[in-house]
Amino acid sequence: MAERLKVLIIDDDAARRTDMRHRLGTAIEVQEADTGETGIALLKARKFDCTFVGDRLPDMAGTGVLQNFYDIGDDMMPTAFVMLGGDAGDTGMADALRWGAHDYILKEQASTPALATSLAKAREIFSLRKARHSAGEKLRHAQKMDAVGQLASGFGHDFNNLLTVILGNTRLMQRRVDAMQDVETRAAILPKIEGVEDAARRGANLIRQLMVFSRQSELSEQVVDLRQFVRAAADQQQKKLGEDIKVRLLDTGTNPTVRIDAKLFDMALANIAANARDAMPQGGALDFAMGSADYGGNEYAHISVRDTGRGMPAHVLERIFEPFFTTKKTGEGTGLGLAMVYGFVRQSGGHIEAASTEGQGTTLDIYLPLYRSG
Ligand SMILES: Nc1ncnc2c1ncn2[C@@H]1O[C@H](COP(=O)(O)OP(=O)(O)OP(=O)(O)O)[C@@H](O)[C@H]1O
Ligand SMILES: [Mg+2]
Image 1 (cartoon, rainbow, N blue to C red):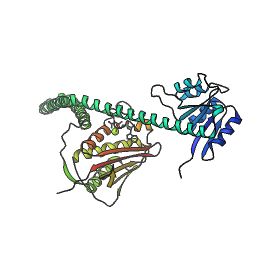
Image 2 (cartoon, helix red, strand yellow):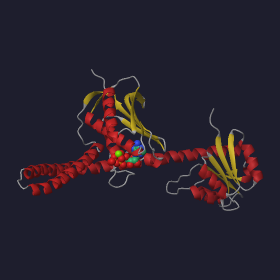
Image 3 (cartoon, protein in one colour):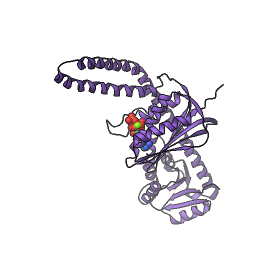
Image 4 (cartoon, protein in one colour):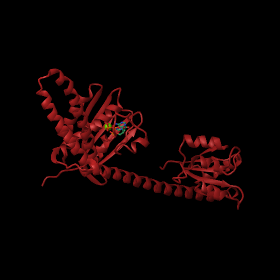
């Protein structure tokens, strides 16, 4: 059975609320509020499928409630809204629609069929606007990812070449200093050279991640037994993460073969594990599961990595694959870890999805094309 629709009626006339409740029928769960403020509080606390709001409330105009929620830039409301108007011909209707209401109905004309029609109409308009809004968001997001990718591809190779020069020269300097007789000078200079080398290496690592994100790195693919590969990666992570994090391996029985760049795949799993570690400062579990699974109607090799960490809110989850998106302090995160993972998976012909619940944990699902020999 379909879930009951939840409707909120905000109006100070108790008799009208009762009348509307009856007309809406028992298939609909109705809540009531007699002032604008109580209505607003209810709307903030719960999710409704539709709200009917009287045009004149004791503490504010009905449009006051609308204005509280209307996002004028996005033309979006949190639920479907129907304004209950007073006299025909007043300016209320135009005002209500201007402030995001999806329909308008006169109080005296709120018959049973009129209410049902209005409810359906408002919900339809609401869901159409929502669909348009999320299509716009998706497009904006894709364009942003594209723009950063192009920017990175503009300087990735050049920057890498610079770092190679720096690294090459530090190595030469090291050799020269190592051969010096003067022990004191040697002891003073060597650590400085090591500092330069270390910084250049970190720079090279960042550029490498960025280049994987923008799909400019050449993949050196090989045929890999997924079960063996993930098992080795899990073992390696267990050693790195220490005892407080329990790495577990869940095998679904199927054993797919994939054709991938093993080094990059390793790097991707290490990036995911590093995030899990950061999300579980008190320890927890990190589960690697593998097998095959359906994605968009096709069969893929499937690797799922789940942690029991702090999870993240929706507005963070939406952005985790963006390069340079990080919630960590400066110096602690660059925001390239998952961007690299995303680029690698996409360049390998796969898909990635993330799910998270605050306080409970995060799961990343990676789908890679199955390799079929012959
Ligand atoms: N397992 C996780 N649990 C909770 N939040 C996560 C998890 N994985 C990623 N995040 C969130 O996604 C953001 C981006 O992750 P990403 O790995 O791309 O960058 P980072 O870890 O911040 O920096 P970097 O990996 O470059 O050191 C993180 O800052 C964090 O807010
Ligand atoms: Mg990271």
